[in-house]
Length: 222
Length: 222
DNA sequence: TCAAAAGTGTTGGCTGTACACCCATGG
DNA sequence: CCATGGGTGTACAGCCAACACTTTTGA
Image 1 (cartoon, rainbow over the protein chains, first blue to last red):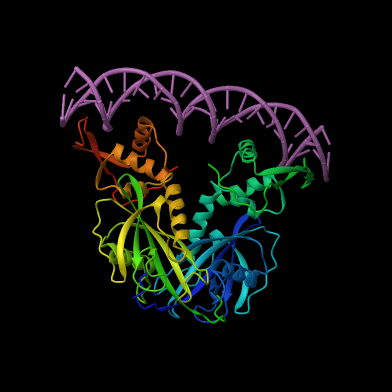
Image 2: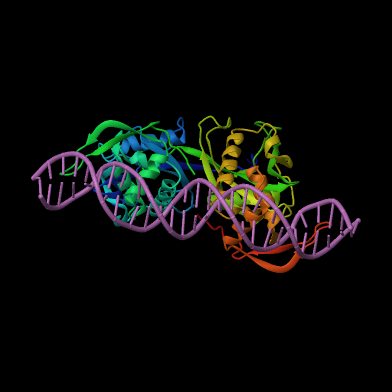
């Protein structure tokens, strides 16, 4: 790094694209801005970086403050730094994305947000700043990563059935999958183990519950 | 983004991991630091972000100032922001990586660098700051991306032979590949077209020269 | 006993891998 | 004419996609 250049002070923020599956749709957590600029527009939950915390920590904090949720899967996505992307001045935003199970949330609007809500990805309201661009990139990354890692499990609770997992894949990928092939594939990954319990869910045969062999681990394959 | 938080001023820099293949080895461009802190250690070429430029622009500039090279393939890698990663204060570094052909360079040490040099990836000197971590991540990304994109072509000039391209893959992946299968595979991608020229390179049959069908495009496959 | 979703195996095509021989050139 | 690397075709195996029937439950 060139030390002869004078460092220019810049505000650094983190923004988090929070995905969850609700009502069989891929949804996104947004906050309605309660302050200028762009008051009233919906925006990603985020926060400015504090002097003593690292980026991952700031992302976790933004999530906790915005939604009350902790311990979810969080991964850095990309950093956005166009000079004119925020009218308040020079703001570089490190974007993260998070996946959370649909049950695991306790929505509580942050102090500066008017409201918090879930929006289907294909019915988003107008977004503040360049957050539309951030969301598009996060969605692309999510779809790509389904194909070579086990992140999809992060959408589910501790135990889940194979048809539930299949629904996650179908919703994120936007296309139906063959039940038999899906089952063979997911079992061949060696990442899940069966429990003795079943899930009863209507007037039909109950499905066996599985759990992750190494909970919390994201495994890459292929 | 929480507007009630007070934005803390932070210095933002970009650092570039420049890969090239020289002497049949994967090499990395480093600058020897000519100023404190960490004077005398080798570091990635980088620069502080200027008020009017975007991140990609700063990365291109860091590269041009460090090496005199323009127009190479450059991609954002990851952003590093541990609070203690730079003893001068809070510095968030947006890391990029670049691939360049082995011919295309005119080394000129930046004003604040004592020297500039190429180092084999498996014989790196001690690096300044957390640059070792950045290099490790860049190397991982490069290997992964060989498998599903056409970035490897960025190591070669405008025209190249198939055995030359194969050497790039073998060097980056660190393992030999079958000539016949490699040729079939690369032709099946539909990204290269043959020229009428040949390359004479010793006392054996000359190899046909190819060129990219869409120069500059990075194509994803599979 | 019926509807509705869960669970199970087999087959054929395709892709990726292993492998052996001929070609063009310079010395 | 020989050494050196370039260029081509084939055969086998493993993987993935397509597909039909039986099981368990609640009403």
